[in-house]
Length: 380
Image 1 (cartoon, one colour):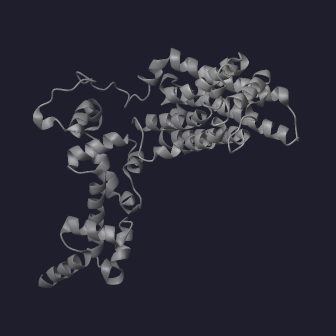
Image 2 (cartoon, rainbow, N blue to C red; image 1 turned 45 degrees about the horizontal axis):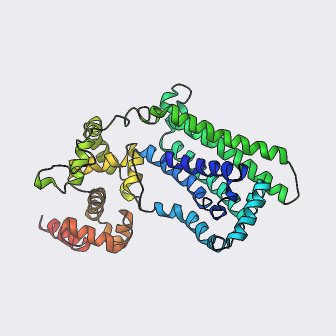
Image 3 (spheres, rainbow, N blue to C red; image 1 turned 90 degrees about the vertical axis):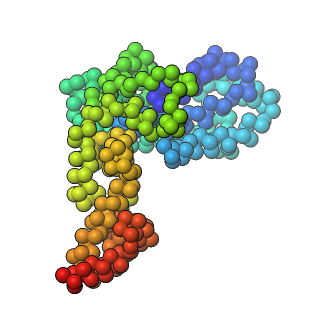
């Protein structure tokens, strides 16, 4: 993810110097603006990198496609420009080669290109601020221990370099807006801000390329152990017939060294957190939020729950919620309150969800259980 983010930063920079400073765009004017949409992808991929690093996960999540919408929208609104004639594009290309500063003015699609320059910097700043917030919330020890152990603070170093880029690009954008509004013209300072932002990208590239093992071995002492290699990776594995489709099992086996670190304590931590009641009553509780409270990557938590409890996280959570509801029923809660109120108190989003989960776990509805419980008390 970090490599992809840097690629989307580096490619437009390389294109700028080759196309406009060196003048090669005149030979291929149809390439004008083809890289503009991908610049929207720099910040999202950097955010994916921070998020996945904190939770020791890889790849995309279900709703990550939302982050690609600005790039897609920009691509679509540029279509009218892409359909312009060769002569029109050549004229624009010649103008830009003679004065590259006009690149943030022309050419445009349906929306002025100057808007995209400012909006991209705004999004980049927002993504960076949220990334810092995630680090501060999930791994504050990284920030506190930065001076004590640089090797363990590789994520903070990456954040620092990206913060450098974000800050100077933001200053550049603000000064550019002030110039357009004719409130202040600091052209020399503005160019300095832009050059300083490029220095930040350069430093980040140097760090990643010359210290790559910081990102591999020194990520987290507790999570950063290399995973067990699977033989014939990339080829068709020769598995026993009954294990041909056993994806989850093979994943657990691959992560076994990671699980063994927590094997003695993780199950107890999960049970303790569930029995506290705070997690049970919290609506919208997800595996991700639960893992944050534990301070353990969600993948390991999910695997431990499957291994020790033989069910998924939602099933286990509902089991404890039903247990909580039963205790309330046995104390006469339904004498004064409705089933809906009990379901809400137990952390369920609706009466139907609570009713179905209760019936699946106990075999009857909450009211039926209350009647049976009262009947058993009468017999005693």
